[in-house]
Amino acid sequence: MALMDFIKKQFIDIIQWTEDDGDTMAWRFPMAELEIQNGASLTVRESQMAVFVNEGQIADVFGPGMYKLTTQTLPVLTYLKNWDKLFESPFKSDVYFFSTRQKIDRKWGTPNPVTIRDKDFGMVRLRAFGIYAFHLTDPKAFHTTISGTLESYTSEQLEGQLRNTIVGHISDIFGESGVPFIDMASNQVEFGNALKAKMDPLFQSYGLTLDSLNVQNISLPEELQAMLDKRIGVNMMGGMQAYTQFQTAEAIPLAAANEGGLAGLGAGVGVGFGVGQQVAASMAQSLNPAAAPAATQVAVSPAPTSAPVSADEIVATIEKLHGLVGKGMLSQAEFDAKKAELLKKLG
Image 1: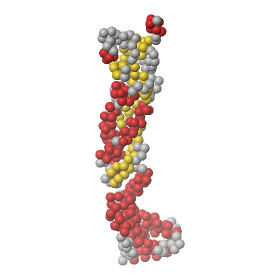
Image 2: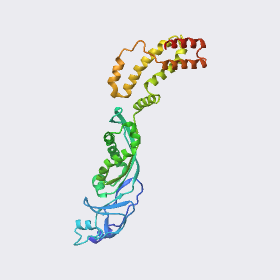
Image 3: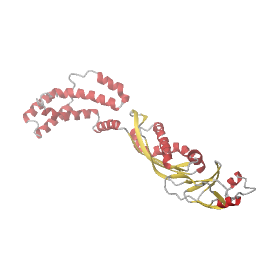
Image 4: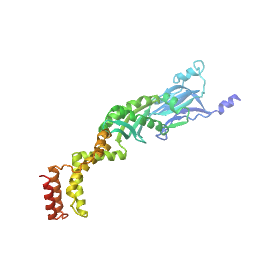
């Protein structure tokens, strides 16, 4: 009867894994009620590793190659099963294959902005995203900490953990660097290297090697980017005084189109520059919170009833009015009258 049971048993003489996708990282060879016979062939392809596990304990590890399973090629398993005295054939053991192929173009990004302290803008919120690549190098550590006894384990199951851990270190990297946001775009390579250095130990504890980690973009949320664009625009026009002059000049055509024409423009020029100073202080406060006390002081100061107008400002206004004559928006008589009125202010 024992002989018949032995004959009916199915024995494994070839153990191998033909990967059918690029996502599986760990795969358990289907044993069921099968047993491995002495001298069976183990084939481990390039970009693979194989591990024998005896009753939950990791035994022998095999790299790429073809092996004949004997006491010589299974030294740890031989020791665990006491085969030094008698080699039992056939035998049972769990066999796991691991893919060591590089996983490339894995994306990470901040689902929500992270808050850091910036020396130019104070507290700001940043977004960042990039890519990384890794591969499995230590199947023992990966089996122990990640995949365990699962029939298969994919990189998709792991990526959420890796991605969230990378994002969790972003604020530390930005904060420790001391680099202002304006200069971050030119330091993305350095940020990627620093972030990789922080992540290397974690990947190694999982049995993985982090091959590369890149920061592809660092940006502000839309509302903060709009404020930065305003500040850049003001600087491009030569500062707040030039910005105020520009705003006043742009308002002249609107005044000409309104009822009464340019009758009140002379008084409006002086008042306009006073108001412009207040607007400038308000904008400076919103764009640079660190200057809030000074901006507040300017905002609450009473506006002068008649702010002095410089000669350059009067000349600029006259030139603007002359341009309106050429466009047919102002008559020559109106221009001459307003020009005379403005020139009196130079006296």
